[in-house]
Length: 315
Image 1 (cartoon, one colour):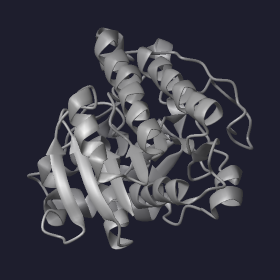
Image 2 (cartoon, rainbow, N blue to C red):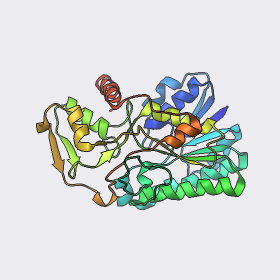
Image 3 (spheres, rainbow, N blue to C red):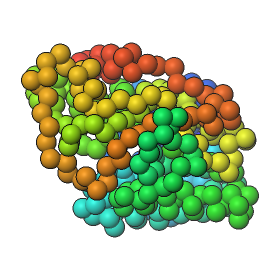
Image 4 (cartoon, rainbow, N blue to C red):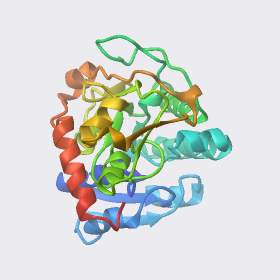
């Protein structure tokens, strides 16, 4: 197939591109490198079925219109502003990228009947204490402009499914980690902790550290993303992906460092947007896609640590 990946030079995006290329598809990649990096995709640039890297923005309608002349069967729409704190500091940028940008992509998909796989986030959910995990029916709560913009994008994508019968699926991966993740900024808690540990620095934990995360290894996440695009049964659906296990940030830190002297609790930068318990129920992904995570947290941390050790120029 001819496939477009927006945000394909980002952390998850580059793994999605890798899997699509391995599956033999022709892949075009669009990224403005605001969060992604050219270094993430260098190994793909000379592969026969890697068609083009386009440095550009999803808000550029003329660029998108010309790009869609390639008659894509699927668009994996991963391009977005993803930082919670940035969205609180400047909500307009996040709104323009995650809502208006998504609308522009949707319009081109509609013209060409291109299936869209919309990357949302577990950050749209309200807090939960259910030990069976958060299902797709769990209440949402836009506790940041980032979450609000993603919920808006989800609604737009599903409206094109219901209104135009455009093939579309909304995916909500939980906290993804692994090689190529940046070691600074939002969402990279595993990578940040590992890098600080290797450098003998303090591991700073926001608040009391009792908040939990369901940590999904990036190659498991990429397989989920790709399979959602392949599956007709996924059309019109919202689908979670996670490991099905959560761990507190305190225990995650202890898993990475041997000495608790290296751990420090600091004031939370955005406590109003914190979700206290994130535990994924991925039964729907298993039923619809036959997908299950394969990599354990212990194995994933080991792989990530090895990558960080061997790629100091990319972290």
